[in-house]
Image: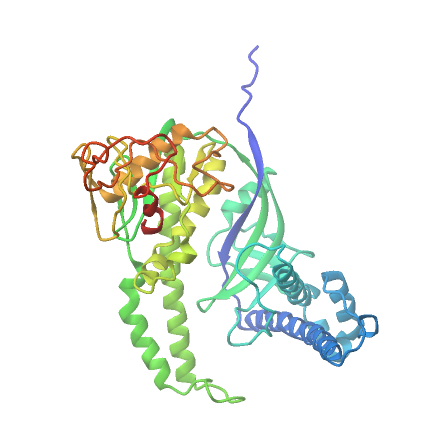
Length: 472
């Protein structure tokens, strides 16, 4: 008697999104617009009440009124905002029964999150750039969206329709079999559904709790360093270069033509309470579809690249790039945004976890481009225009990007298995750790002591070597 084989592969629970394009009927599209408008109405009404209290208290303080005598504050939490809305919705929105309650909850939840982020940013408990006070949502400026968390949210058995609360059965443009198979197997559970309009088309995105089998890379012991750039999207330490498709640059001529046409036509700019012309609306739709097409092509290429790396290599080493700071350079900002440096690292973070691999993030100050991958000497200066690395110590000549990728791959041996250490991860001491000898600056009258290539102690930098971190 033979016993059935038992799959011993480990599994993990994770949140995953499945997005499908919708093909709604005209009446269903009007209902989608109504739900998005209901979310905007609830958001703006609650924001007006909160803003009135904040401004009233500020005015009373300017009059010298004691803190205890100020106008009582109103809670900014989602339950408090929902209670106030339920009390006043019959007056503010007499038509509230025509929309799902989730539509109003969407606007109130967005406001509660925005107010919390603003408050945490002011008190210093939120990291990152400073958050401003929430603004009122606009019908033209903001993306129409609504999120459903309760009610009938399911896929139909024909795999061509989805069911959402109050909206009923909506046809999807593509088959839902990828998600339906997981649901039928009991390895997926739908938590919420978000409907958004992007590029002239409605999409529904399901947030799903998925039980995934942790797989293994094809080469679990292989290490690859990935150096991202503009000329080549990614250069691997194996010598492979992934060309940069430059999707936005290819479409830029058409984008400029449509933008000029849009500026010449009669739009809403400078014309309050007046509807834009039909030609302006058609041109605006064309421009939106063009931008959506560029974004879809970019994200498709990045997914294919990161999936291939996570499936093949057991350890992937990337740099901790300060993308926000790099976007401050007006000469290369558009090219960096078009390449998607931050998206590459974000996708590698979860894909390596799904595939049982390891992602090592080198510290932002690690001199990957200034270190010779052959002898380990660190140059004191390397301009951005220097596309070749010339080592004065061993005479080797390397491609700049390939040399950086090889140094990143060699860094993996110096990092522990958790991906932390003095050269990687958060909490680094922000000092450059030299992997080998340091090229010291030669001083007059010190030919022997100041000879180029003189070895420096590990972790000790000469005065000339200290200048490289600001010029990297």
